Amino acid sequence: MLSAPATVLLVEDTPSLARVYAEYLKKEAFTVVAVETGAAALDAVSDGAPRIVLLDLQLPDMHGMEVLRRIEAQGLPCAVVVITAHGSVNVAVEAMRHGAYDFLVKPFSAERLIVTVRNAVERLRLAQLVDTYREDLARTRYHGFIGSSLAMQAVYRIIDSAAASRATVFITGESGTGKEVCAEAIHRQSPRGDKPFVAINCGAIPKDLMESEIFGHMKGSFTGAVADREGAAARANGGTLFLDEICELEPNLQTKLLRFIQTGTFMPVGGNKLEKVDLRIVCATNRDPLREVEEGRFREDLYYRLHVIPIHLPALREREDDVIEVARHILVEYAREEGKGFQRFAPEAEQVLRLYHWPGNVRQLQNVVRNIVVLHDGDTVLPGTLPPPLAPQAASPPPLAAVTPAAGPKTIRPLWQIEKDAIEDAITACDGNIPRAAALLDISASTIYRKRLAWQAEGKI
Image 1 (cartoon, rainbow, N blue to C red):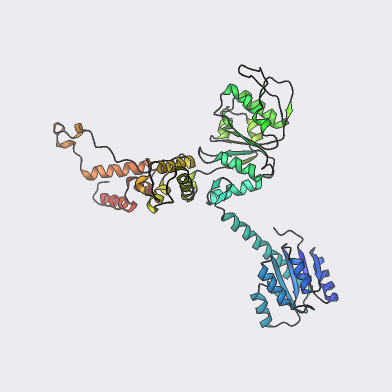
Image 2 (cartoon, one colour):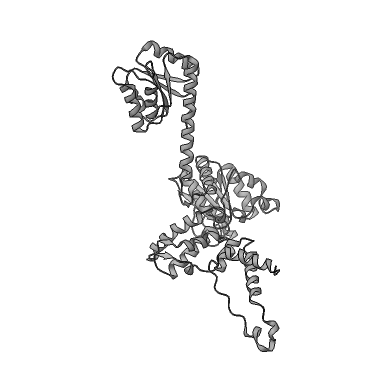
C-alpha cells in the first residue's frame, strides 16, 4: 500500500519554479524529489515504486509527453499530473489519453497544486486497494486448499495475516473440512515454513501414551520404553506443532500442555531435566470448544491460551460452487493415479454434486470421486455412475405379502398417493430443499412443483 507521506517526483527544468513547487508540497509533509530532465525522470520511476509524478511538458532533452508515453507503456505504478505553460484542450486530451491523472496550467496556486496531489495520492491508493482485492478474489488455490468462494477467500486472508505471528491459532470446523490442510497452510505461509511441521491427532493415540507422544520419554520410564525417544515438541523445534482434536486431551495432560505453552519448556516422561524449544502451536477440533469448557471437559485457562487467533472452516455446503472446483481437481488426480481416462463431469452430474448436502464435507467428496474412478472408466462422469446416496438405488419391490389376494383390494393404495408420499418424504429428508429432493428422486424440481399444485387444486393436500 502507498504509505504517507507520499513521495512526489517533480520533473521541472526551471530551478526557481522547482523550488517554489517543492516548498508548497513540503508544507503538506510530502517528500519531494526534483529532477530537470526526462531521462532523469524515467530513471527515477523505473524502480517501480509507487509515486506521484509532477511532469512539465517542456524539458531540455525530450518532450514531457514522451515521458508520459513511456510510463504508460511500461505500466509503471505512477499517478502523473502534467504541468505546462502552453495549456490547450488538445494537449490536455492527449495527456489524458496516455494515462495522465490531471492537468495543471501555469501559473497555479499552492492550494490548487496541493489539492491535485492529494487527489492523485488517494487515486493511487484506491487503485492499489482494488488490485489487492482483485488478486485475493481470483485465488482458486491456496497451498493445499481448492476453492474461490467468498467463505474461503476470508479464510485465506486470515491465514495471510496470522502466518507471520507466533500467536497460537485455534481451528474449528466440521469433520472433513480440512483443518490439517489449514494448519499446514499457516506453517508454509509463515517464516517457519522451511522448518518442521509435526502433527498429532490427540484422539487417535491411547491416553496413556499421549504424554510420551508430545514430550517424549527416557529409556525404562515405562514398560516398552526400550530407548530414549524424542516427542513431537522436540521434533517440531523451530517449526510448528499441530495438535488435532485438542479437546480429546485428558485433564492431567491439559495441565502439562498449559505449562508448556506458558514457559516453552517440558520434561520428557521419566526425565529429570527440563528441555526448551521454540515452536508455534496450532490446534484444531470439530467440537464446540467453548461448550467443552462450560461442561468442564476442557480447561478454561488452556482454552484462552490457545484461542488467540480463531479460524472457522466453512462446511462444503456453505462454499458456493467450490464443490465443483474440488471435484474436478480430484477427479483428474485420482484418474491419473488409477490409470483411468476421466477428465470431466457431465453437467447433470455436477448439478447432483451441487444439490447434495455433503455431511462429510471434502473427505466425503474425495471418497465419492474415488469410488467413481475405481469402479468405472471413460472420459466423462455421468449421473448413473454416482454412488449412493447421491444416486440412491431404486426402491426394492414391496414384499409379496403386502399385495396378496388374501389382503383384499383395500390394501392397494392409489398410485398418486404412493407418488405423493415418496415426494413429500424426500422433501422432508432434504429439510425442505425441493431442488435437492428432485435430484435424489431423479426428476426435475418443476415436476415436484407442478404435482403439488395439482394435488392442492384437487384437494389432496
